[in-house]
Image (tube, rainbow, N blue to C red; front, side, top):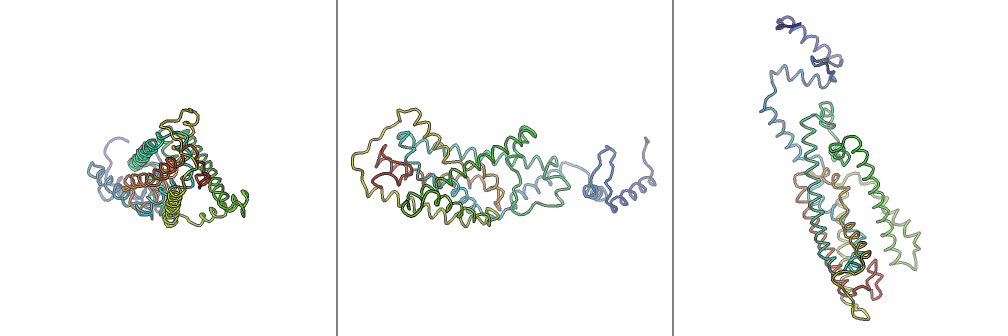
Amino acid sequence: QSGPATPQCQAADEAAGEAREDSGEPQTFPSGRRWGSRAARLVSAWARSGATPSAGAGEREDEAASAAGEAGTGTSSALGASFNILCIVVGTGLLNLPYAVSRSGWVGVPLLVLMAAMATYTAALLGRCIVLVEEEERRAGGMRASLASRATPPPRGASSVSYGDLGEAAYGRPGRWFVNSQVHITLVGVAIVYHLLAALNIHSLAADSLSMAASVALVAALVWLHVFLKTLGEVALLSYFNIAVNVALLCTVVAASLERPPASPPRTALVASDAFAFGSAFASFGFAYGVHPVLPSVRASMRSPRLYPRTVVASMAGTLLFYLPISAVCYARYGDAVRSPVMDTPPL
């Protein structure tokens, strides 16, 4: 019906609405959309309070959402997140970088620095994309920021935006499926590579007592214990230990290289003449910074996600403190005679 409603009609509508709220029945609004009971209660309470949509209200909502984003739902400190990233980047591949530099020549050293800068930029860009998706979901009432889901906050430490969400924001549902499949394939493939590298290193150290199959089984048993760590905040404690192991490994390899000279003068080159060898070295350098699949989870685990860009910069700078000394020292000492892993080099 057209025309203004009478006070009696308004009172009757309010009474009917309250009755529907108490019964849990979804309400029907003039636009024809049916809202759930929790959303209806929220809107009804808003209407009874006399509030009206305004720019000031929107600004206050954005400020509250921003404050919530700064506080975060994670349990990890910025230092713990930095060590998580550093531990993921610097692993068993550390012992293979001298061989990669021998395949590329001295140009591989500045390439390592360039790729660190590229990894830092893309990681920061990824964090910015996550922030944009979160802001869009808050404004539009998206997947996790809908009125119904606000009544049930995510568990502490849960990831707010995943790679699949970014894919869907850019390309819709097909983007989510494609990105999720690529991320899972990458994670499984990288895990297999690191598993085999760790087993190979253990076998090279204890070839007399452990077979290759036993080394693979030993690494699998050790890695399986990580399932008891439910959040990256808990993993941070283990990351401190892993970084200490990598520091000891770096110092041991560099000291042994300086103490044990090669039998003949090393042969080095500025740029490798073999294009295929250079290509394989380039792939190894890129693989050395392969941390991006887990960065959304690392950011979500932080108590202060606003510190994520600084965390990434500090972590990538820390990787160079590992990569540059072992690559430059071992290649300068042994030249193209260096092997992968570096402990297989004859003087070592």
